[in-house]
Length: 177
Image 1: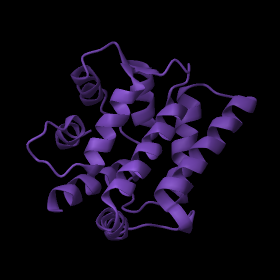
Image 2: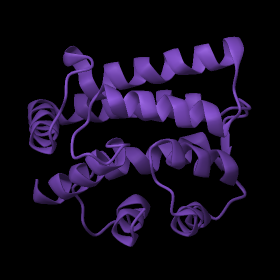
Image 3: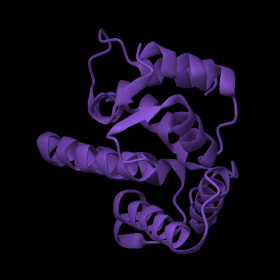
Image 4: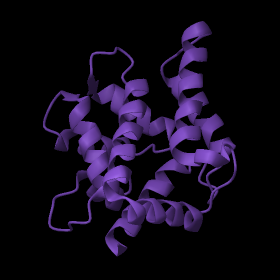
């Protein structure tokens, strides 16, 4: 469990978009603004993407407490309880979580993520170190990474307790992503 706790704390830091030490509606707002600005979205497209982003946050991060502030301890406690209760159900939920978010990120809907989409997505979540982001993207060894591969790496990151497996995202967070 300790290994997952470490990874969940990194995920929490990823979700704390404005880096104020808590996850809140302000993080959602900043994420939506950055994402639409980076992609230069306007009108209906911006509105649709903003709704999708907020829905993702409410469903998978805030859950029943939509918009309520979440501390790192609360976040880890919620994930830990869900994981202990039903590992297979937890993994299935995380699979849906990452499929949904990557569906939003995949702006051209080709079911792959290129370097620009990858960098924009991470920047929308407040991660600006493009050298590290490029290094992480390059570790997938493709110019356009299939969404399934990205989803699988995130599911491994939040669900897999096996320290012996290479974890691309854990390595990236340790580098300062």
